[in-house]
Length: 178
Image (tube, rainbow, N blue to C red):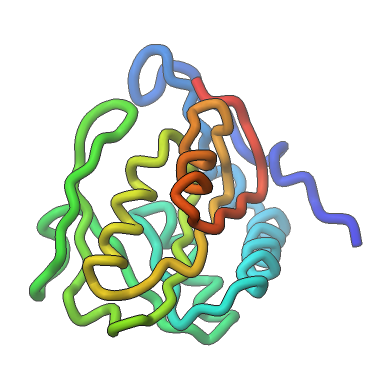
C-alpha cells in the first residue's frame, strides 16, 4: 500500500515566529480534506502498534490530530493545556522552548494510576514540550505508551532525545530544523 507524500502539503514560512526560524505550517495540510484524512489514517496505523488506554495531546495543534484519532480509536482524549487554561486542580510542568519558556498542565483527575497514555502532537523539535508532556503523564501516575508526531525536525534532536530516554516515538514526515 502506497501512502500519500504529506510533506508537500506542509508550508514552510521563513523567519516565523522570529528571525532564523523556518516554521513548518500544518494549516495547509489540514485544509486539504484528502491530505488531512491521510494524516489521521497514518497516525491511527502507527498508534495501533502500541497498547494504550487514553490519548493526550499538546495544545493547540496537537488537538487537531488527536481528537480525530481519539474518535476513530474510541479512546478517551486528554488535553495538555497552557498554564491557567484548565478550571479544576492541575499538575503543572515548566519547560524551555526553542524560543522561550512555557508551562503545560493537565487536570489531576485525567489520568488514573498505571494508565498508558499515547501522546500526539503536530511537531517535535528540541523535545522540550514533549518531555514536559511525558512528565505530566508520569506525575499523574500514568505511563507514556508512545509519542506520535506528524513532523520531526530531525536535526534539532528532540526525537533522538526521547528515544534515548526510552520512550517509543513515531512520526510521519521529516524536515530539517532551522
